[in-house]
Amino acid sequence: IEYIRSYYYNKLEFTRFSSSVGKHVGFTEYGVRNAEYWNNNPSILSAMRAQKEVYCLHNIQIKYDNA
Image 1 (cartoon, rainbow, N blue to C red):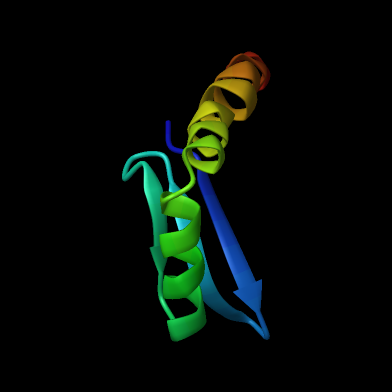
Image 2: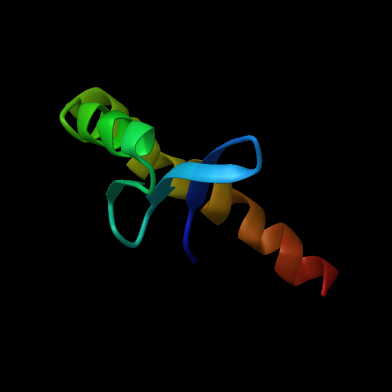
């Protein structure tokens, strides 16, 4: 299971957090600046890493029960 949070502006993805990578990755100049800032802030990183357990693992049983 992988948690991905993407940030878009004008249909262009500029930053993405992936739980398999464990940090933000920037795709544009603006996105790289944001990713560097967010990756240097331990509270933001720990909150994003916790989202996998909060969102994904909580809802996976619901998906399997419905299938």
